[in-house]
Amino acid sequence: MLQLLILLIVLVSSCNLCEFQGSTALSEELVLLEGDKVEDRVIVECSTSLPRTRCCVGGAFVVPTYEDHMIDGKYNEYVESVSTSGKWIIVKTIQKLKNQKRRYWLIDKLPATTQSKNGYALIGPFDEKEIKDTVENLRINILFQ
Figure 1 (cartoon, rainbow, N blue to C red):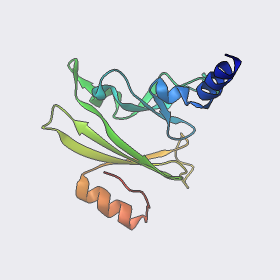
Figure 2 (cartoon, one colour; figure 1 turned 90 degrees about the vertical axis):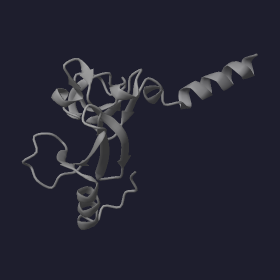
Figure 3 (tube, one colour; figure 1 turned 90 degrees about the horizontal axis):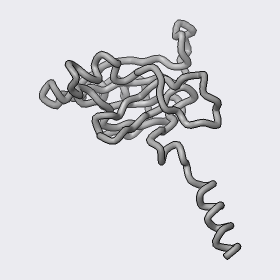
């Protein structure tokens, strides 16, 4: 019985409870939040008032913007997929109310400029051809869908 209890404690402590709760860290500030529906998926700048030991449960919308996420009470744009590396995040969103239009975003997690008031720089939106060209021109080594 004691062995089973120890095994259970080890398993629970090795799990990423934040991801289990729908909060996936992408950088120091940015988190992919997921809700009960796929349309709930958004990237937020997590509130800095939360202690680092707690999971992010909300923050300022980054992708999509708050205004684009819902229109007239209906889901419009949400995150379909995210790919990340040490410096970059590539985000693909779907605009549900606009014929399933896909938009792509680049987030530089380590911007060289100090003009960014945040610890990241958001670039986009791009269409599929533009994102492929931009990724190639910037020599970003991320596989994305």
